[in-house]
Length: 554
Image (cartoon, rainbow, N blue to C red; front, side, top):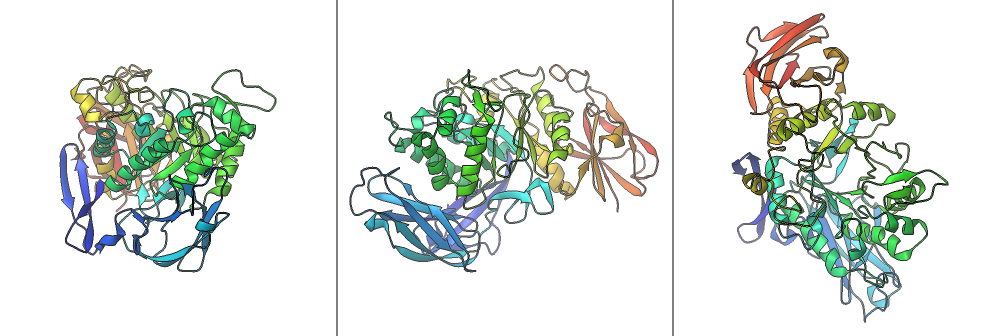
């Protein structure tokens, strides 16, 4: 689904929602979803009204130029919600004499704001605005009924289909719009994005003397995130402000002002955006107390923990926060109060073992955010590998992320950089690893199901996750029959035979439906459409290849 704000008749702005499956799309215009045109879309700068679950921006001018606008001046703005509750946010410098502050509009009604600053021209300013109804989904949270699942602020369950678009905000990447638009068409709902311009450093965020910020870089980050918000507000942008810059992280730990400014400014500028969540760093090896960094990817866990605590203490809008570690090094912050997501980096997790290992450790979502890529540790059969990785992760009670091109390297028109998935498919650079993600969306939409309250239960299918993955709830059971031709995930392909399994079903009269995960087609069971539970039952799919079996009680 794609949402975008489109001009309409004078005085009105209308949100157009486009639902895409492959190359086919239909557009609908939700009834009673019209909002005043001066609301301006998901972000409103100084208008009379703003959208519910959108962003309102206050802009102030200083009396004169400020010598050190980043570290030498202070600005906070306190927003008062309609119920009287207060949220105080840090302001951010945006060039010239302009300072700004942003609110995430999480409540309907009349809001007011007032500024406080050590600069006379910025202090004591005030205003108000009206937050009006909108179809925006809002920020992502833990699901209120199942903390291992996600939900938007509007209550909708979030189906996590991740993609890796590291250099999406790098100013030198020319194909970022095509990348984003085509990712949405694929069914991607989260994109991992770092702030690095160099391969392993974020120095371009700062001026060369480290006394301030490279403002044009930050403004481009802002522009590209707002583009994403305007085009598809349901797609989460997981921002990694320190990227893979171990030395910068370690400077943070020593109290370096520039290193610490990066996180503080990023939050002040971007945390109010409803499509943003935070990952502190990427691919770092955590060192225990007393160990000293000897490689660029070595960072004491205590440093990441300090950054996490600092960011959580500053965070005004409850934006989700996590960290990402070296492959197969687990997650060091399961018990840290600031950590909202258990983020994992592993290999060949087509049976979901690492998700199942971490899922009991905390009531938080478990996300496998890195495995193989189509062009790094590439599987021999990427379409099958990533299809089964997604299904296996979901039915393990977790979530997974795809990797295609080498988006950690600058654009070269071939295997590197940010470019559209379909463009790369047509060029023969990608081999279809993400082709079947749209069918995952269709399954849950057609079945009118979510995974809220469901628990992994591979024992029901014989405890062989490489063969059958099972998740079960009180009224529904979903089994994914992987039907691989090999036990080696790197080289396996789907067997062109009918998939079979034996399930030990709970008592009840279970209705049977089959779903083909590579075509998106539903099939009736070739025998009876219903089966009694209480005993092991054998199943055989009515088509060849891997298969999804849905069992539901009437």
